[in-house]
Image (cartoon, rainbow, N blue to C red; front, side, top):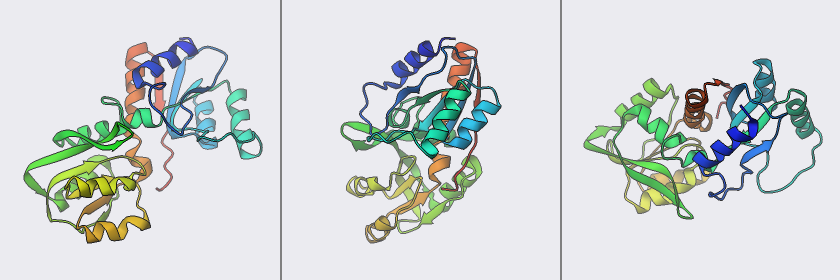
Length: 250
């Protein structure tokens, strides 16, 4: 398959050019023009590039890319990354916010779907775009049961701020580093919020507003959409696709 054809397809289904993002998304590093095997990873890193080369991939799809709003020199560690991609003929494709917000392949909808939790609607609005999902339990579920779901079905190791009710009715879910949406949780009257990574600065707000917050890991929470893209492309184009599991501990 032609590299540009695959990139154009991803641009279209993920609405790459329609969604504003600090991340430079889309095809950011080209190869010699052909794709035979796709590797997928959460982060653009030297380890990911080496592993993609080791398995013979010539196209790497990542969620966290290389450029975040400002140009920087291709020297030192950035040079080593770029050199490896070019030497191994690996194209690099990035989808950050477009993957988080996608209604079918997104990190959020994929994770919540795998938990079989009832989705009430979208949650977590920023500049007209919704990133997460609201879950509505009727009857209510115990906080302990929700944490056990996350441990059992997602293999998460949750950090729990159990400041809210023991019985959960309305809950928000946003993958990654999205604790900054806690004020929306409070404003909309949700009693529990799940995201990836904790932040010291929101601890007291959660406690004083009596909201449960569960952190399942930034990395883990953003594997689900990446894996879904791999399965979709493998089925759509009969290409080999392999997810590279390179956890960061966060």
